[in-house]
Each structure stands twice: as C-alpha cells, then as structure tokens.
Length: 100
Image (cartoon, rainbow, N blue to C red):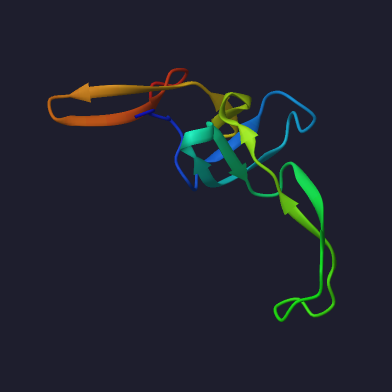
C-alpha cells in the first residue's frame, strides 16, 4: 500500500504543469492512480445533457485530477517538503524547512 504525505483538506501549491503557481485545498486523493483533486485548480469544461438534477444541461466547469508529484504542501504561505518525526509510538508530520 502506498503512503502519501498529503491529506484531504491540506493546502497545496502546484509546482509543475499549466497550473503552476496555483494554490488550493485537496478535495480528494486517488491512491490507485497517484492523483489528487485540488479545489479551483485544473478546471475543465464538461458538456452535460439535461437531466432531473440539471434541467438546463450545458457546459459545467469541473476540477480534473493532477499527479501527486506536481503539488507541494503549503505551510505559512511557503511550499515545503514533508517528513515524519517518530517519538516512541507517535508519528508526527513535520516540514523539512521549518521543522514544525
């Protein structure tokens, strides 16, 4: 099983690709594909047919996933690498830059 250093709800910054420099919250992590959904980043247009939920139909903007290697965790406004500090039975996530 793969271990990722990001969690849902973390604020991340895109470090590569068309959306480089954008920031947003992680909505979902797709573990089997190594991808993340970030709120307000990598928006695509999806054409939808009229339905009961959307009687008008039309074009809907929706977030597409990014590869997890293209995002970095943001702490105190700065993108940081993440490590773990193990003290006995407790494992805490720390930033490698600030050691917090």
